[in-house]
Image (cartoon, rainbow, N blue to C red; front, side, top):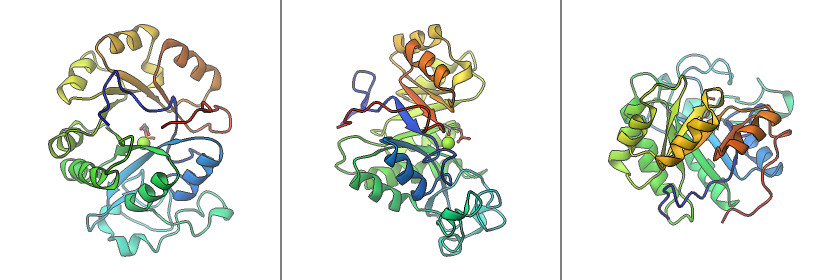
Length: 253
Ligand code: G3P
Ligand code: MG
């Protein structure tokens, strides 16, 4: 399907980094846990290994979330697959591995779940990572009822994704909201603005909608604030608080 402003198939609640903080981020265990809590769409961070394989990882270095050391770009997939990406979180997750995007796609598609792939390039690999994510996403979600939503803070990565797979929907991630946010989204052919929730207002969401841009927001963990943003018309809340912010109990497809 083609995703545009009028055809927006994504749920209002999206689990951040798989299942936020309840399980080790960006692992299959996290995604399974999120799904067990009723979440049907998962934001994950994708970057390239040293030998060009897309894996789930937030940081450019391994120390915080794995048993490894050094830059992820300095390790090939064989080395990365030997690391423990679960123990840092808690003992029950010891031995959990760094998943490839290929494995995650297989799980999500088999379980009727959707994905928001945040293109998270290691420094200097923006174009390469944007193109790799888009090409692989096109291949992995071939024939899917709902395509992956690609997002990035890197405009170079989004532009590269657009060049190789223009049909995949894109969202521009923003921190501080610059006055030219709408033009930047439009220049990249984005279907959505993906903003820090603290930068949004009812007026800004209405303006985005008027410009035919959907609005997602991250990382919103306070249930009352989530209710306010949804009341203002935000289209997606990306959250770590899967145990406090409950997804809509409706089928996606
Ligand atoms: O995609 C939204 C959010 O994940 C962006 O921040 O640092 O958690 O990747 P970060
Ligand atoms: Mg992210």
